[in-house]
Image 1 (spheres, rainbow, N blue to C red):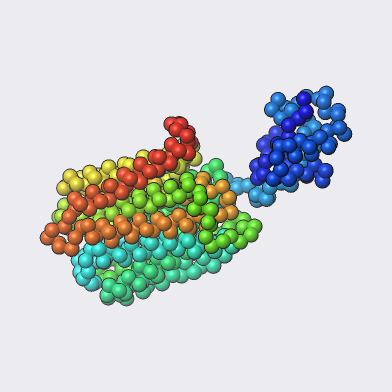
Image 2 (cartoon, rainbow, N blue to C red):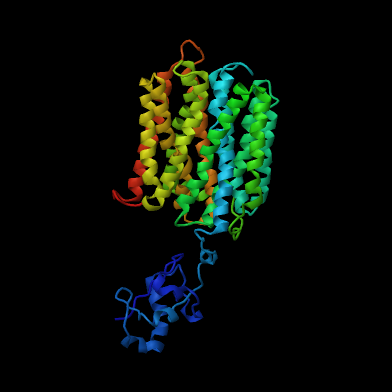
Length: 488
């Protein structure tokens, strides 16, 4: 029986025929567009010159001899094989994780601190605005971080990583210093919302896109450790702000300047030590239009965006809820944000490390559903003990929304040279969820301090979290074709 030769385009060679795609004689070139008949014709043209193959052992599937096959059909190695394999460890690789930790400390760590600023602004000591308007400061700051990735991703893909790190670090520090001299709502919106937000947006996606060049099998662990910087930032920044402002009574200006000096010191690490693992082979388009036909990517992005709505309802208002309902003292209300972020530190490292074994979406699904259930449970919480327990649990399970989506984007992107661009697109969409969750939640809460609709707020946030979890569950079963134990 004559051997059946099949050549598929863009298919990586298996290990037992690694040399099959290295160099093919001109007489054996097969057009990728040809059908099986044309391939057989090309095969017949050289089969007569190699009749010795007939007596040798053959592969049961292809019919080709096992020993002669590698030297007979060889083609150029696919371009992506020219890229060096990630070391999955070593001093240089782990230094990138430390630098990523510092960036998360000053991006998501600062965003996670806004609940403290929301509570302080609500007192009217700096300016007087409604809860919804105040929430716009934090929402725009978060949105700029997420939307900034849409621009920073393609810039990163073009090799301008150092420019992003330097400019982003400068804007974050500048935002703190400008906020320290603000006295009106619009000044705070420009300094804290736009300046700091844009700076963080230039840093966030590139810091994530660097890590896949250094890690593959341990990528979840690496990203989880880097993402835990946001939790530590969410602990140190609010405690420092409160103690400088209230305990040491240095005033709002110097309290914020103190945060700016911490940001300046910690951002020295990525500025000095963070490096791209491998520059892209060729520039990519600003927008990757293939995402519009990549249904798993689209469904994941929409589902996680919906989840961010519920996430930011809690992050913005849990501290103010404890303060306004008198369930906690003013001091304890400020400390709820650090408590949430301490728990979130474990929620951003342990699931990520586990995701290398189980798959990230398998962990993101229960995380979203549990967050929804906890938000609904807040309807019945009235005591300080109940708020603290809720804060600890929510902090842990909400960590998956920050730490796991980057790992999911890597898994859902076949062409790794587009990771920066695709992460930018995805996180820009997540920013829409922030806008709906923060200011939208303030609108649901109301503007009358004597009649705030807390039950409606928790229903609002919990519903979005549940919808997100169910959509992610549907995507998980679609990708696994209904298999319960599949790694997705």
